[in-house]
Image: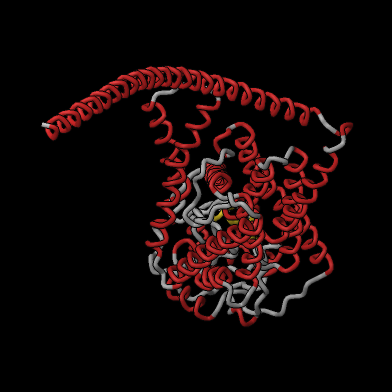
Length: 547
């Protein structure tokens, strides 16, 4: 009879309204204990459940088992995302070169004359960036609250389209330039087209789980690289610190936007959008098989027992433990609905025969391990990778600092999962990891600078870096020498021209002096002539008076 009752529950969930399964996800023996209570009788006749010591020990063993499994499920993708970002930073110089371009959300520049002005500009940039994040969070919450699903889907679709096509095109182009790989635009367009289309299908429709996870990791790495390149240095560190505080408030405050969003999704029994979260288990928004497509459209959605997290609004969550109810989840409304569909729920030979016939059409049961899973927001991947990438890209950062930040993030993530297992509710994944990462970065970076100032502490990497800087300095000096040579030649030509002009002016001056001398002699002659003429005139006047 217990088997027949179980078959009845499973078949009804695939043909009529889906059953609200309140089974404890952390205790798979709860289903077996509930099966012996049905026997075709109303749920009100069930005696209270008694939890034994052996069941508690089994619960603890399962908690430890799935706790370690969840840690590994998150460590692997987070590590892969950070490895992709660090490898790109170390090999492709495009993402570390500062060409003066910044995001529109960070209009204030940091190349100022004073440290105070730079700090003020970084604070203003971080304020604008966080304000944009808060506004977009509120817009998303309002759209989800008023069931504007098409707008949200279009929003996520356009974002994924931009990341998978445009940013991927830029990324491949820079990688090909770095490694001097020649490729025509037609082949590159075919590669980008196939990569983007497959990614859109896997993220927004359905596809293999590993492929979907790989695409989510890739778009998170691309977004982190964009932030690393276009965010100023001080602004980036300040944003990492402030976003962790905002994440804490948005998730744990009673009126926090992310808490409202998660609670609304749980109340509606709806899954969150897969374009916003990384899931260790399969999450599709459309039918996974033909039997799903043939369900009654009026049936309520299946209960979603896992909270989700959002892009740029990170939350980490796992399947919470449902509290056992006295009716075992089979309410009077559900019993009445089943009696209308299958008749009176009496344990007779005829009813058992009908149920066994229905069992043959039942879809295969999903493995319980696959239903368990941890979901981490893509924003967590982005900011984790951004922190490690910034540590790797800074002038004083080396592998010691990068590895310290990497270990700090994993430690913080492990502590977050530990708190998640204790409190069994959605928790922010950024505060602990980002706090540890920032502390490890600045502590390791400053300590590394002090140790590297000693001659005996210089490692091979430091020497190679010093040699490279000396080579760069010598090449700059050589360029300066050539530039000075060209300037000297131009000055020599100018001096020659000035000397020629001076000689011409001297000749003109000498000629003018001769002309002036001749004119002076002529003037003197004219004066002498005038004097002689005046003397003759006076003599003539004297003679005329005498006459």
